[in-house]
Length: 71
Image 1 (cartoon, rainbow, N blue to C red):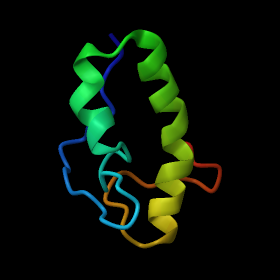
Image 2: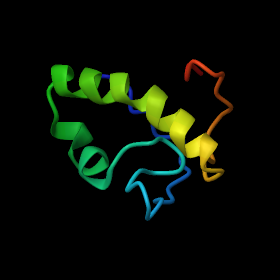
Image 3: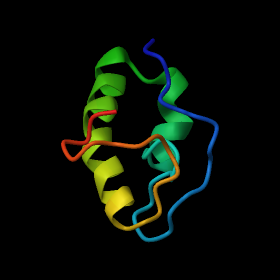
Image 4: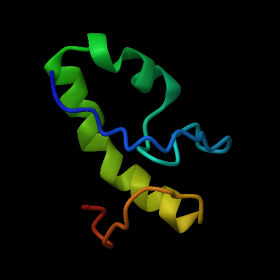
């Protein structure tokens, strides 16, 4: 199992459906512990552009991102 991207800032953005702290959906958060590594990797790969989008919308509460979306 891969390390969860959770940063203990659990607030969902209603417009996107993503957490404002980790950028995962409720289904991704709920299923994280039982998900295979391949699914966890796919979710982790999808997070950087989501973080950028949440930051662009002014609702991102996680760590700062650079323009490429990397932490």
